[in-house]
Image (cartoon, rainbow, N blue to C red; front, top):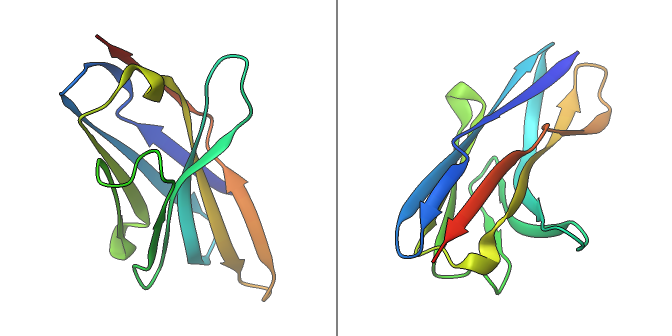
Amino acid sequence: QVQLAESGGGLVQVGGSLRLSCAVSGRRFSINAMGWYRQAPGKQRELVATITSGSSVYYADSVKGRFTISIDNAKNTVFLRMNSPKPEDTAVYYCNADLWTTTGGRATYWGQGTQVNVSS
């Protein structure tokens, strides 16, 4: 069983900063990539950023230059630093993990989500 534990959400003001964390735990696995998605009320879930175990990154245009994704492979933890957030960044943020399992398969797991509210 694999669990993803997210933390760091909350209320942040425009121009402030917030850091989300997501730790993967459970049975033996190796990380292929991890990412952050978000879903605002009435909207579809959208990709925010991804990072591979080799630290190759991808950002949605809407967050490029403001958000930074990073990974600590030793701790199986991914971070999302949100700088200069905007009200439109308000959403539930979900952690995603793309893992190789001990049986050689590949599986995707999701966190439970953490609410981020940006106030103006």
